[in-house]
Length: 325
Ligand SMILES: [Zn+2]
Ligand SMILES: [Zn+2]
Image 1 (cartoon, rainbow, N blue to C red):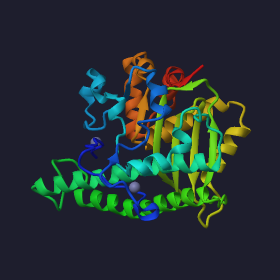
Image 2 (image 1 turned 90 degrees about the vertical axis):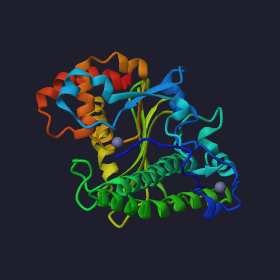
Image 3 (image 1 turned 60 degrees about the vertical axis):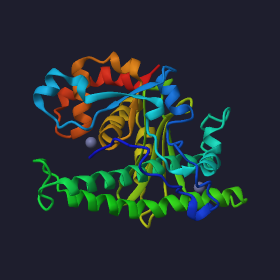
Image 4 (image 1 turned 120 degrees about the vertical axis):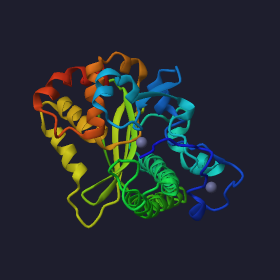
């Protein structure tokens, strides 16, 4: 699926229904990752970050000979730019996590709501952008009812998945905005639950924001330096009280080799499931070609089919790429 975002084409304010009074002439490049400290911390002030190039088909020769083409560099101003809020609501809704001097993550209800909104507003934009992209393909494809250009994916099925996801995510986004509104009017009873994992290192060299469904619950995920390294998972409780992320966190806390478990989780869950990942370019350049190949294959295909000895071979290098100090 195309992950390229053409920021000029789609514009709306996600808060219109709940907050109203939009500054309609002025929908802005949203705060979703692009502003604030997360990406500038990651880029070490040279204003460029690395990311996966997901647009290429996996080709054995190309992977072997030209792994660089499976990665790309992104200027901060282009990274994750979405137009999801009008100017006024953009400022209002991210006040707590974007305001200078308030960048220390301290797990307050309002911070968690804002981080969750960041993740979901990106994800909604991503699906809308994909709907647009797929509709272009549908328009030009000679064979809409079977497949597109020899790739296996069925265009209409992908289109339908994107639309279904939008119908699921939109109400959740409204619920988050409603809670932020209520909070500011003095109702401090926040229903959004959050589990955060402090990553035991000075700095994490990748960042990510994403919404991922796991066992029937949508998790709003942020991996950030804020300024210490955290994985933040927020969600609304469903009927099933057995919450997957609590089990993950408990598992980490009961183990002796916490770092190794967190590394494995980063690799097998975050790198595999997330689309919106950015990397510290300086550290990325220090990876060997083999390590870059391994990381890319994990991102695209997951960890399950890779033999244990291969994982072991790369774990040291990748570990020190993810986690610094
Ligand atoms: Zn793509
Ligand atoms: Zn607005």
